Length: 503
Image 1 (cartoon, one colour):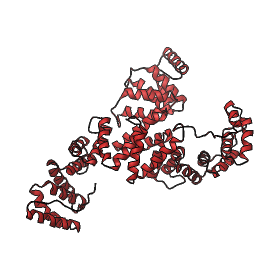
Image 2 (tube, one colour; image 1 turned 90 degrees about the horizontal axis):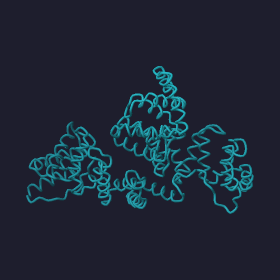
Image 3 (cartoon, rainbow, N blue to C red; image 1 turned 45 degrees about the vertical axis):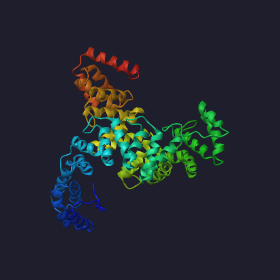
Image 4 (cartoon, one colour; image 1 turned 90 degrees about the vertical axis):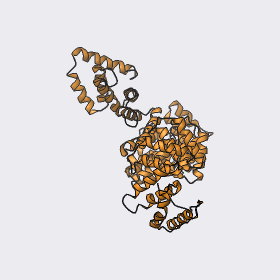
């Protein structure tokens, strides 16, 4: 963290000390740091905490010689020991980041606490993040919110934005859109661009009955004969009614004709015709059509693959706040398809989408943070996004949460949680989770060892394409008797009959 020495406007009773201090201050302002250090060091050695702090700031920013960061640490420590609020906060930052000393979140929290209690907004925010994650302290969401709120009320923008995120997403706290909007507004007024985007996203979300509604919007028209046909599954009649409207330029009808053609409802699937109708609606700015057309370009359906065209269409919808388009555009940036690869830009778009409840974006964010960072805070963020997606029923998110619980990564190792997440995911056909369940039963990890149940889950995983599970099942079969194999076969049939529940 960099510090700027602005006007040094405190005074001493001793005129000699004041003169020496002011000489140092003038030297610092003209960036003659050597002279400033020479003038201030005697005052700091004499025990003045404020001078010790300024001297530490000089060493930390200047770092002209090897070991200057350690000198900065020494003077911050001496000032902090005397109760200097800013120095206590900086000591916490040293331990939090592992600068000069080994990273130690528990010691970071010890230093942040007295600084926060004196009212330092940065210390309050950082201490709040530690309580939220249970990093170095026992996890306490209520304390985290309290400390972050103290910082936010002092107009600390990062705290305002983090609070807004927590209240909007509803992770670890009860969702409160009014508070989310309040803190986003404050953060946006301080120039946090993402807060402005999130406010826009909230406004767009309010236009829809749910955040994660189908992309195939239903238009509102007086003449909706075709809607009745669609509801009855009479697609041929629906297409006839839609065609009349579409040929007159109705973009909603054009879009729905594109859907019917793409899905092959009422007539054989026709990607070329779907492309034509989507294009007509997209040219009129219809967001759903732009998104679907972008998908066709991305996957090369009905025409040659064109990532550049896909990115252009996704961006049009993303800029309007459409979370489907934002999620798709984010992945193009992550993969460098149709745009220059830009991981930061990709994460920005995925996050905007995920905050609106887009399950795919939530999962992809989690995967990105797990695969591209060893940072504990990023792992915790991955768990946050996986949890939100898992709550919506994502088998992939559930599988990843099971894996993290099994590994003890980002959370204490917990076989019971791993088993629960794997079972939820396995019931939806996720072969990874099915094989992991099999291994847990085979080894007796967190459950009673059960070779027959292991055989059952190996079987399901193999059926769903997991090559290693097929090998595992063959090896296990060699250890099972004919009777045991028959019993395992019955378990498999019963599980299928129960729709994979309570297996």
